[in-house]
Length: 226
Image (tube, rainbow, N blue to C red; front, side, top):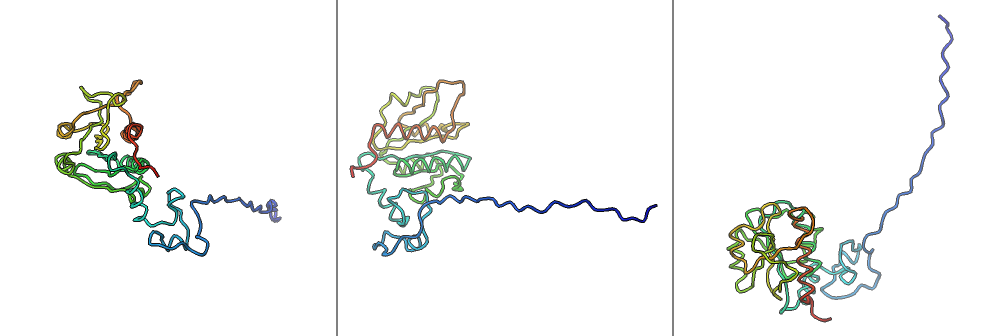
């Protein structure tokens, strides 16, 4: 056996690779001095910046001020409420709330025993009026004289694209798999469906709600003239 020690293979010099990290700027940074004055401005946002998902018009404003401004823009003679019954997926609920914010609806109503965990809305629910009703009857009592229109592809429903949606009222959507309950259908003045042309029996409930809100907005202006 040889007493010579084995020679270690030369090691390659360590190469340090610097990766450029691109950080996308979200929102705006601190507001330059002097700051605007008034109760509508949030001192924390003015000092540290505003990274919220809001229009530039609402940068640095408090949540209460944004909600009040949206309320003021809404036409008392033409405003929409959205109701969803027995939805199980928080993400779908959040998607509807976010779309409702985009269309500046007057309120979102969660109907059913299960409340909402508020995921997926990207905090847009803060700028809306969100209420919970345990049963269709409770929603109907809250609505009073406001017409309730169901959106579901049940027998006897009419196509939404040829219907006249009320200028002020409630559009209600059922759970994707089961649709509107018999009690909710009974509470509706009419039930409309979105005409489909493919093989699937139904579309995603959040997508259906977005289509219906857009259909309403094409017939009724949701904001007063600025």
